[in-house]
Length: 211
Image (cartoon, one colour):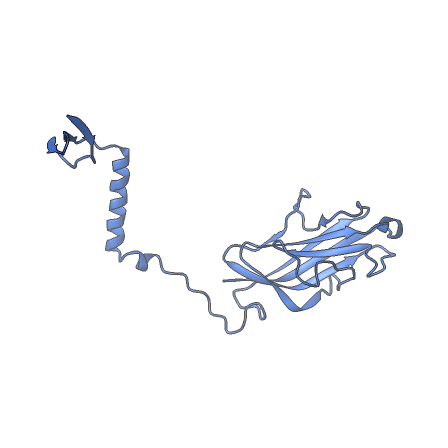
């Protein structure tokens, strides 16, 4: 006669069942820690039912109402940002340097918090040294959003505004929850022989808003 494991408390006394080929006895075992977990969950579910159920306690998320497109006009819930990056010369030619760094000098792109979207509507590229001929390719800026480079901003070889007067983008670049924003700068071949020591500077500005 074979013993069959069953849920604790299902039978207080052994019960003999007759099968086709053999009989078995169902044995009740004492409660264990798994039974305690199940009983605890059952108590929580009963309490949840008394309070009105999930629909009453866990209210569904509703998107905020924006009278105008939030990526065109910043809503009252919006939060502005302005990140600045600096790369001093000399630097190695032909290398893409990330300009947004943490205090230890490690790459730290601007992060879009989960649950928020945003827009980049200001972009600045500048150089404080001399002998930079714009468009020559001696300095190339690349704006990266997540893993791609927006059209017209993946290889910028000219000066865009300044830190005091940022360049406004005619069409903002939208960014989304969990995304990143980074700017890279690269020196072209022979750039260090023409450029005097100075700082490569960049910045991005815009705002985030709840989804």
